[in-house]
Amino acid sequence: MTPGILITAAGLGTRYRAAGGCGLKLDQELADGLSVFQLTLRNACESGLPVHVVTRPSYASIQADCRAMGATFSCHETRCLGETIAQGVRHCVGWNGWLIQLADMPFVSAGMHRLVATALQHHACARPFYWQSPGHPVGFGAVAREKLLQLHNADGAQAVFQHFPPYSISVVDEGVIKDVDLPSQLNRKPC
Image (cartoon, rainbow, N blue to C red; front, top):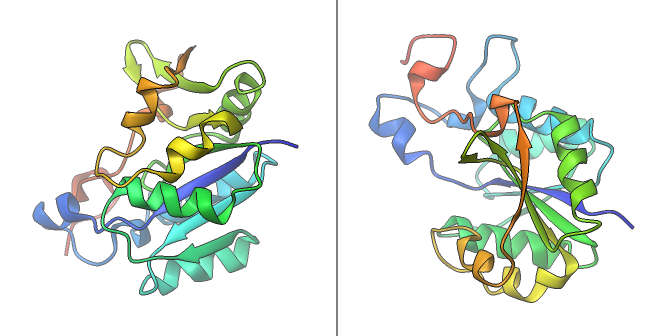
């Protein structure tokens, strides 16, 4: 049994909207014609690992993208990243590990997901580092299940690192640290 990829797509995009963005950030188109979320989901699905998305009931477009790509999803009105992760782990509690992938990081490759999943064969937690910068996905083995289920704060899985310090995977792929937080990071002008 392999770990799966848990995509957190329940955020409110407050930084994006504060910078003048409109609409759901994850629906915004990138240079290649795919939306932020579609590219994130495509890369995850191409890894060959199971994929589950946690999103909001009101995010119909995210749910439609999941159906189109054959990814499972669950809908929750979570208040923060920690709650979103916990809900995802709860839904996929039978997995042998979880790769936490933020939905607004569309440049994480399928190969990077496989690299982190492979590291979990020997480590309780693994994470790519681009030079000294921590990246995503962050992988947790089954031993971290209970700690992940207890998450409830905005720091995501940071509290779990106290119990399971991440094994550092040095990579030269900047995609592990690139997210889309601002309208200026898209290929078109904000509305």
